[in-house]
Amino acid sequence: MDTSSSVVESISSGPAPATWGLLTLRAVECLQQADFVLYDYLTSPRALDYARPEAEHFHVTCLPGNHAERWPHIIAKVIDEARKGKVVVHLKGGDPLVFGRGPEEAELLRGRRASPTKSCRG
Image (cartoon, rainbow, N blue to C red; front, top):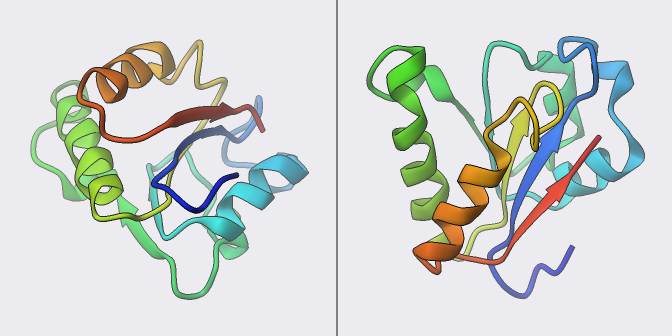
């Protein structure tokens, strides 16, 4: 991952998102480079142990609205943190390109020119 610019990584935690042991080595690499990690209730707290100690952890339930209304706020948070020059990881359960609104998220980020976007299945 290029840390010279803000990079947003969408990370899947595998078919059983609460099972931290199913994270791939690539997901661990991304977490180890993150400055800011967004996660939700599907994420095992043990998965966050792979992030750098100084990385900020942010649970998406801290954002306004219920589950269905929260997605625009999540995107706004990702963009805000990336524009601060942070490497942002949005840790997701399931494949981010199928279950995690990955394509929509990437398109919004590109449209706002917030940062380069990568997806890491893992």
